[in-house]
Image (tube, rainbow over all chains, first blue to last red; front, side, top):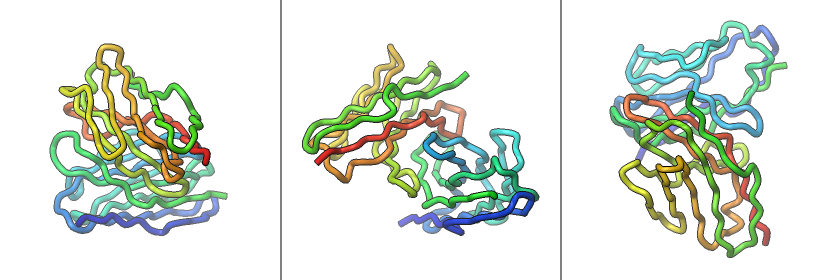
Length: 113
Length: 112
């Protein structure tokens, strides 16, 4: 069966520090991968998605970047964190070339102080 | 532009009652809809989905209804249990778009 992992689970970082969040998927090949951000008490905002290694699409201009160095690994990064980067970051995967169910990881809670 | 919204931010029901969570969407091209349940501090969990060539789909204790005429989606939960307490999100997508657009969520509170 497929599983998705995210780490760390919780992170507290000072403003201006770098960020690296990792997401890995097991049990499937060539998944579509997604990064979402969720502000407290709000819905999910799509940040990036990837349909293959090295292929990244950005949905919103921001202080963050994403990379996919391996088929089942998706990384969310920042060179300098802002206070507004605080939130709950969720990675998700799906299969297929048309819309299919997206399955979410456990999330990383980021607090920028 | 696209938007997916919910009519009620909080829904409180008695244990054993049926729950109905509503969602409106604005994009006429939307052809795939999905409901997620999110418990506090966890990632969203898939509940049920429906494509635009259907108007009803049933799962275990859940039913999704789609009314394309008025662009309305609902999730019905039968015999609501305390474990159903969570935030429920609807989301949509359309052919050619790989990502989902999420609504803002409805909190379901089940009273014992």
